[in-house]
Amino acid sequence: MVFIPLPFVIALLLLILFVAVIRRDEEAAPNWPFLALILLSALQSTLSGLRWGYGVQAIGVIAPVTAAMVPPLAYAGVSRLVRTSRRPLPARIALHGVPAALILILMVLWRDAIDIALVLVFVGYAAAILLLMRPGADALRLAPFEGAAPAYRAIIFTAAALCLSAMVDTFVFLDLASAHSERALMMISVGNLAVLVILAIAAAAASRSRPPAETMETAPRPEASEDKETIATIDALMAARKLYRDANLNLDRLARKAGIPARQISAAINRAMDKNVSQYVNDYRIGEACRLLSGTDKSVTEVMFEVGFQTKSNFNREFRRVTDMTPVAWRQRKG
Image (cartoon, rainbow, N blue to C red; front, side, top):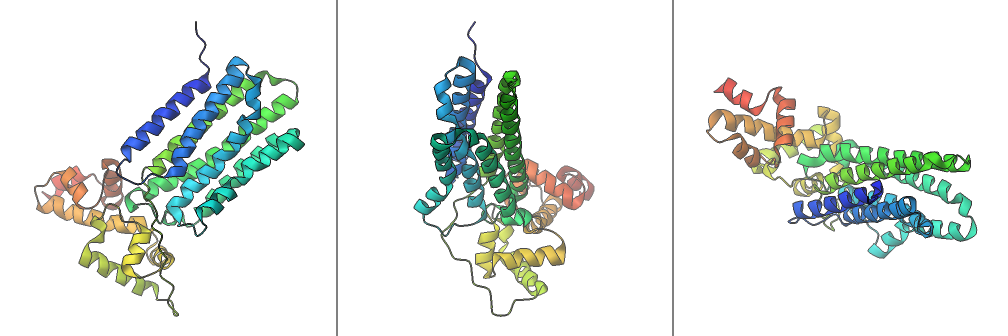
């Protein structure tokens, strides 16, 4: 009977995930760091299977370097949803290549420190991702509002999964150091499963991304507007132009159309309305959906697309948040 190590199965699933993300987002510009992360982790799982399933010890020279590239790619993918980098592409590649370069140096000079260095890289990038997410869902300026909240939760879980992977590496290191390494194989298998979770969540976030336009944010006015003035401006824009119908609307695009810095819009809505911008925009969408469901014969799906939603799950969740009932129940009650 042919023995197929679990990491090989995970690698196959990751390749299937890669193809699924490519096909699902074929009309949108891809989030290249996330796609590279999926392929890299498939390679990492394959290397792990060769080492622990078939005893190919030479893999131990390659695996630490590829592992050190995983957290930077996760961070780069998240940052594409958060902001437009001001650094040129070569500078960004060089910056995120530092962890892999460090591992290469340690392999020559101090091999015993590699495991500790990898743990620090994973934890450090997890902390960096959490810092990017400090403003909440509004941090995802370049993600459409419909997918901002799910993407935010996915990214937070991704950071937690990076920490989990670091914990697994720590346990494996301690297990090997104690000369009782019989548990190491099980720990490494669990670690590969954690990587699969990371990539599944990262792909979910990437599927809602769009390529950031190389634009400059409008400079703040010499005297900051009051929150109510900012909200009044956005309200007028929503009423006049019905921007919420744009399924690809995001905070960065809204800021450009309003001529108000994105941070100012986010802060005003958070302070004055106790909600994030995604919820604010979805309130408009649900308000119009209620009117259409009550006053027209359009199907729920037609209404969903017309007001700016693209998926039934998001539409139903936001509809229930605002009205405390489903779209069908609303129509029956108001009909």
